[in-house]
Amino acid sequence: MAEWETLSGMISRGLSLNNLLVMKFGGTSMGSADRMRVAANIVSEQQRKRPVVVVVSAMSKVTDLLLETLRHAEVGDRTAIDANMLTLLDRHLSAAGELLAGAARPLRDSAVEAVHSLISEFHRIANGILMLGERPPRSVDEAIAIGERLSAVLLAHYLESTGVPSQAVNGSEVIITDAVFGNASPQMDLTRRRAQEYLLALAEAQTVPVVTGFNGATVDGRPTTLGRGGSDFSASILAAALDAEELWIWTDVDGIMTADPRLVSDVAVLDEVTYAEAAELAYNGAKILHPRTLAPLVEKRIPVWSKNSFAPHKPGTKIVSHFDEPKGARAVTSMSNVALISMEPTNAVLSTRLMARALDALALANVEILVLTSSSYRQSFCFLIRKHDVTPALEALESNLSIELAHGYLKPIEVDENVGLLAVVGEGMRGTPGLAGRVFTAISRENINIIAIAQGSSELTIGIVVRLDSLERAVRAVHEECQLGKISSVAQAN
Ligand code: ASP
Ligand code: MG
Image (cartoon, rainbow, N blue to C red):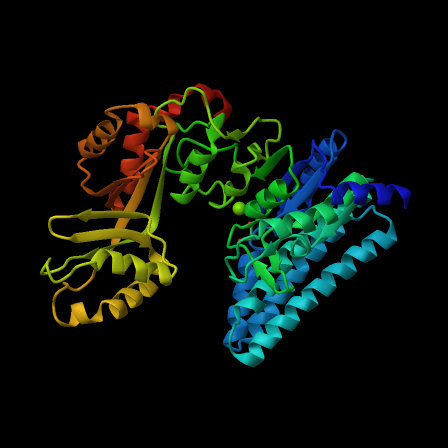
């Protein structure tokens, strides 16, 4: 008790542990009993050296299964719901059985009971949706966070069984967000207070908190989620809130690569990238990190390591705030699930503020623009968006510009889904004259037609839109031309 009082006094004065490590394990790193054992080994190894806070994803494919179950519920398909419930129960009970086979009876019982009770909670929400015939976003968020709650319970129990004191923590207790269900953003001051109160006390008492990634709650306790893949973001929110020394993100690849290894054969793992480079890569389709992950860390310069739990002794990629000597282009990435929307007025004089109004309408409809190019002479412009945003984008544009469209001041809006985006990223591109020209030449040499080009104002990224069937060739041509595979860390890739 005396110790506790000292600690809470320390926390209320805003002090924190100065060598805290936050580690996040993704879905494949939590995907089976075997994988969870590996994760637990990594945790206990680090925990001997410094305080650790763990953040976990749901077991691989569980979030998809939960979402699919809720869609079955909405249309009243009981048989499909029941089948999914069995799969869910079986997957978690088998993992619990395997992990805790040798554990003390009360620990095993407690894990099995927790799994049953969480799955019943999910079932109850699914039944509510079935009765209602619709899926309110708030209920969806509450339901799908159960994937992470299940995996957190399993890992925490297993850690306990190996002698590492541990406690599963629901992210909704420590991450306070706005009320944008399905894509919430953290309120950092409130989160900081909650997270420090709750998690530092555990860490200080040598108990490893295993926090669910992906979810949070509004200040009045309504459950939210941070967007698909949001566990990375949870981990960075907590690392920032707790002033962690480092954040390690465990995945199933060796780190951030110069290109997608499925498209390019001689990719290399990058030793280091900057926050800005990693964020640009993530926003432009590299599936390394949730795109919002880095923002909370920038101000405090908390370094992030992206590591492979299938090869834990490889160093991985370190994400830092800056390098002294940035080198040219660093990586190339691509996105194929995109569409190009073109708008062209028939009469420039009558169509003032067209682009501003279109952009406004898209922002209100929550449609993100990936690339925008315009011709000031013809007042025409085109922009690239994600394919799943095409319907809301067209609805927003057509309703906001209905008069212009009806009177023929604006040509019918064109949608081209047969396109892909390639992005070349690197801090050093700013200071490398001629690089853009070389990239375009390399693409043209392959007889690939460039449809649109956009260079971000940061000059860190060049975005190029090409026909979808030439996207992969374009990626290979750029990777080759910029000699991305021949960087110093190439040895790491093997
Ligand atoms: N389980 C969530 C998802 O699949 C969050 C995450 O894994 O990062 O989107
Ligand atoms: Mg992920």
